[in-house]
Length: 179
Length: 179
Length: 179
Image 1: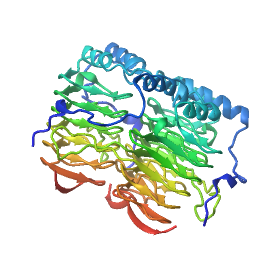
Image 2: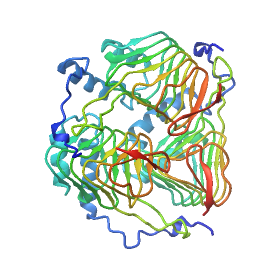
Image 3: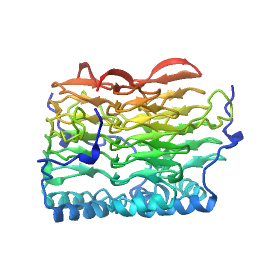
């Protein structure tokens, strides 16, 4: 196979928003939301909602949280988004209630079909259920569902679904023990 | 167990500084220390000291180094803090002399007790002894002591104490060989 | 051994550019290239070329891409540099055509000889051949050659050469299967 990225097209991929909205979010995000100078959580939450995010009560959102597409984001009640965590949601990300996403963690929805020369998108949604803890600097891969109360440890990479109450570690993350 | 982050409180956790000092550091840090435009090491070191950091002679501090609480930071002589390394010190971080913290590394002192529904803090200090090398993009977990001359390799995660002169690799980092 | 970073010198290390050029690149980079406010790919590519990068046609360069030394960078045709990827090229980095470097990935050329007390540089170039995919948040270590069409999976750390068409995973990255 000869890879040919010049032939890549986004296919039927739906960005979920029009060009103007995406451009406006880009600027608002750079200047006010992921901006390092702004510690005001209320302002960030209001702006995320204005761009389509569904957010429950009690969200704690730390500094430099990076969200690609607020219109593809749903968050329940009493969640924490840690400093510099990154919700790279080309596709939908659904987060339940009482979820902790720690500092530097990455929710990764973007993927490519590497079996094809033009590497077309193979993006997939991420679902994180109630009570989950995604550890610092860890990564959740496209299409993964993390079930209730599961824990992904520091720096680990979840490539498959995680079962309820399980503690997972490593790259790829493996089940270690019950919470 | 039903996780209930709405019931979280910081308990007897001591931030180590008053509200005004924390706010001032937040701004000074965003504008002048972790700020990407500022390459002037002398200015950064002076500001860190003004906010309570104890720093020996000969510190090399690269760009976008991120330090949560300078008042919880002690650094010996002739140390290097690499580009974008992150000292996330909710608790004390003590670094000896001749220590290299490479680019993108994370010293992580924050933790939670995941056995309890409200996930109370279980923060713990980090101690890094003389001659240690913490590799690029690696992470040192809360409560870990890294003994003299030990090395944590690129991208590894130290979850337990590392013994003197040992080279550790992986997630969790395991002892591989003598330095 | 007693580590003595105070005795470190750059030895015969060649930064590849004069002081003025390095300072100018520092500012241009902070203000316009790795700057989070700037989504204009054409501007970034023109600035990289002005500072000595050799870049083929069709480069897609996302936000906050961080390049240490454009004068040490060669990129072929139809490549992608993902959001926040980091080419930390103290030494030469050569990227072929149709290569995807995903978001948050790190190409690391800097190293130190840890057997010697003053930790002198042991930097080494990185070569990435045509059709390679370097996954999100992964790291390629100094001196590594990644051969045609190989894939480094999410969060993995390539410490040795990767053979053509191989898929590698883990820290250190191990061969898993054919692409």
